[in-house]
Length: 481
Image (cartoon, rainbow, N blue to C red; front, side, top):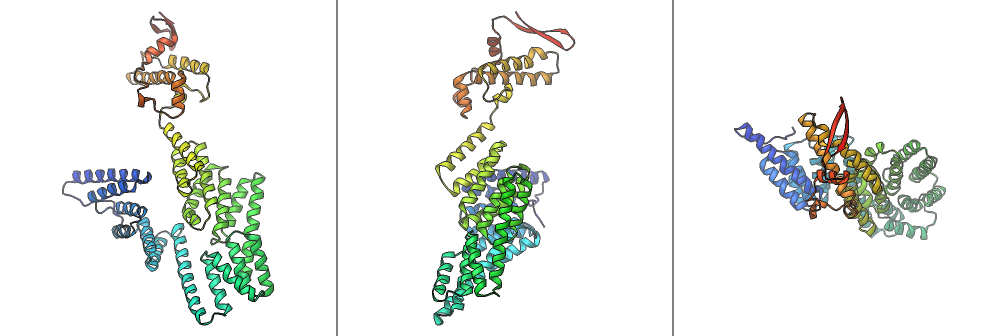
């Protein structure tokens, strides 16, 4: 069973203290992992394990860190320890499988992925890993066997076609095209070779050209079942995609979303076309942000596979769509996370600039928002800022709340100080400029001499006193001495 508990010492209080300390180390490890400081993350996960050596998730976290450091044998050991402690730990089995696959043990990897599917039958990443592993493993074996066979029968078109088809299914399109073209130079009516040419074009997202080759293959061999199926899939993909595009252009976003989703079910193996379909569906999703979590998770699970197959442009485009919507909705942490992924994949000046903008907005979001404190827009004029301060300062002045409870007085005094602080910054062009650019004014002592009462007196003018007096229950008016 799952084990999130440590060895139980004699003293229960000591046991709880160890758990708290271990959780603290784990959280520190998580923080460094998010920052991609994997060496420090490894250090803190190790400390968590030292405190609680029977917590499966700690080993799982350290395994993930070791994988990022390309230390796959150590990561494999941690993954195996994690699933020994908790046989239902899905991430542990998945990481063990990936480590086995990276180290070249496909059979062990397959067992791990099958275990994940036993625990979670709908686990998309595991389904993809199993399908990919099986496809690659059997495809490579066939290519190897055909090469050996061709050593003895170098002119056998049947062996060559079988090899070319497997190369195409492995994504080695240039090699497959070359073999098929050699056959067609000697026999232009070879339906199998025409089918392979079409298959390469189909998986390269050249749908129209692919259909032409499939049709030609069927003319030469009317009973060619593979060509018929591929031709049907290609036409269906094109039709659904075009229907989705029309619906999108007409503003029927729900219909477009549904059509793109239907298109994605036609052929999961067509990576490049599906990458563009995911991109289109995400564009539709951007019109309705509530539908994005599912879109995002599905895309995220496929991102690495699309990059691996050369689908860089649509992959980056979809990430930028997510980032743009995150920025629009002020979800800056999510925007920074995804812009980092964009920049890591393609280090251009534009992507670096977008990442810096997101990081700046995230930094600014964690400070006091002086515009919100005064209740003005970010493009407010000097006169609007003064009027807003006048209103808010009178509203929160301590004298106005002298008859309130101690708790209310304390809260109003705090708001009064914040209003004065906001006015001090936004009414000073230099401070306002530095604040708007994301600079922390406290860093250079810019707010050291701030005094809310002095600001209030200076604003309302005169050296005399200021007081609120009641003219009736709940009614106040202010006067200057």
